[in-house]
Image (cartoon, rainbow, N blue to C red):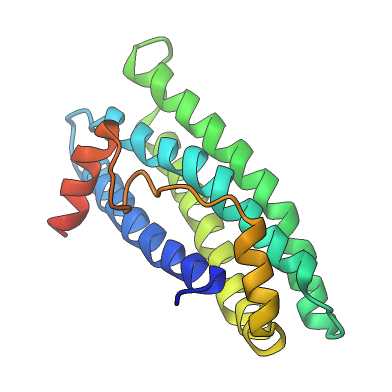
Length: 182
């Protein structure tokens, strides 16, 4: 039986696939005069704000709360990651709004500035997941007992992953197809 730690790790693998797609899209922006598919970019960020920020990050925080942290490195990593959750949510929302404004010609933005903003978001998210995967998750796997994981599984409201789950939301169908073609 998969535990919440397995699900969180799987979520990270899926986000890496999504970020790889986003980075390829950014390279097209950098090399081309044509307008990118801003709608696809918005859907990447929509996924981040509707699944990662609503299910994944709160689930992580419940796991963190279960840990009896006696290791200063892990303690510092958890504090950093928890503060990053809110920052990443705000960045997702701002970037999604910026892309919507650019797509609807509400504003114009230099492509290099847009490229920098998107790369910064990707870098922050990669750094965030690396910290969790390298320090926090291994610590949690060592410390949490089966009964702890069972309690966590019961306390966490599970939702269907709208992009990678069994039932995909319609607005993510193009995104899913692009990821499958990678």
